[in-house]
Length: 158
Image 1 (cartoon, rainbow, N blue to C red):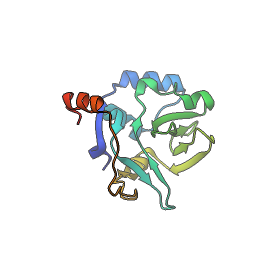
Image 2 (image 1 turned 135 degrees about the vertical axis):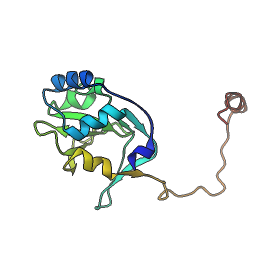
Image 3 (image 1 turned 180 degrees about the vertical axis):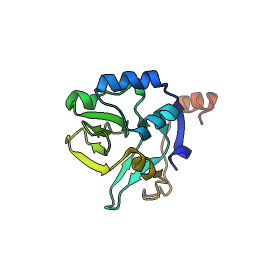
Image 4 (image 1 turned 30 degrees about the vertical axis):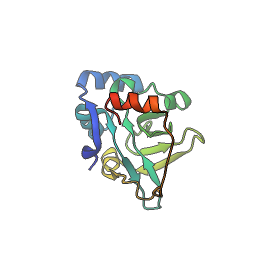
């Protein structure tokens, strides 16, 4: 399902993945290596993970190989490797030395929550978020600066 939600990605070569492994001091799991070779830095649209306990996590983007080991989370805790992030500054991480399970790291509380036992299971958890749980606006109106609106129309954005 996650493949349908990707709107941007590139391919990582073995050389750049090897450099990242040297930088973090560990080898990545095979499933993660294969994902990076095909979907390096993948950006997702409307993607979420729903756990059985009713917990929902947004997944916005996977960390590009060239950034592995040098993101904010590694500065706070060098036992973590950020592999993806949400829109709120929180990360999905591997934890050293195992690099098997995937965890969710909350940047405000620094809490680490175990999500699943492998990267491939993590991918299987990703599904489309239809935002059906949000209230629909009834008779919603808003004011927009007419000059701004015209500029957006001229650009093809409105």
